[in-house]
Image 1 (cartoon, rainbow, N blue to C red):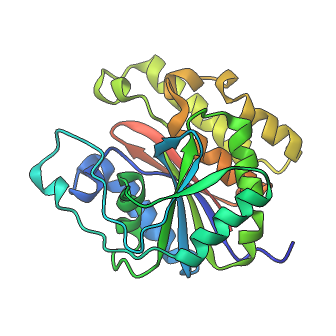
Image 2 (cartoon, one colour; image 1 turned 180 degrees about the vertical axis):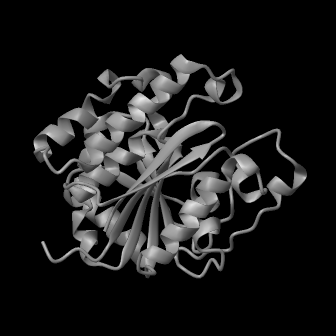
Length: 267
């Protein structure tokens, strides 16, 4: 494979629109994502797999200029007027479709869905000008870790292009815990899983088959099921790893709503 030009990033995107509303509990996350955007080469296009879109078959937004899908409720009125007028990259969308089909992974174009907050929240933080074409691709509803690693592997030829590939999820996603009391045990479970995730993604001493095995058996990690009662916010990481096939070279760590969270970058 040609030298990697792409950047791959698993991002923790925060709670709904709160990062865009000046919420103090998200400021560390906002600062980290803004710094990341300055640290990596500005991409020619962005591809996002969001935790908030699951389909039985891989779906690719094909609209020339997708609207936004405000997939949250109970927030201030301004949350439903956020704008991010980014254009679709039809060439990249077609390339993704072609690569998946060539590897026997069925996919189709979706022309009615808008970009959900797993896309527009981190992108509005990182690239507020909305001047980089973007496409969104769904997860598989099975949420099977191995299938998502395979999905990433199928797209590895994209790495020779100046594209930013984002797995937009959250390293910690237990909604009850965000709003519940924090005690020593909950902090230990949160921190233990974050440490395991960091070692899994970054340790150079792991062989790649070991790294893949750990990710496929993630639920056996310390604190895993506390941090992820349902795995949809972790699964974008598996796509990132399927693309990268090597240790991450950067970690962003911050506190969100009282919980430790991490992002991992391969570039």
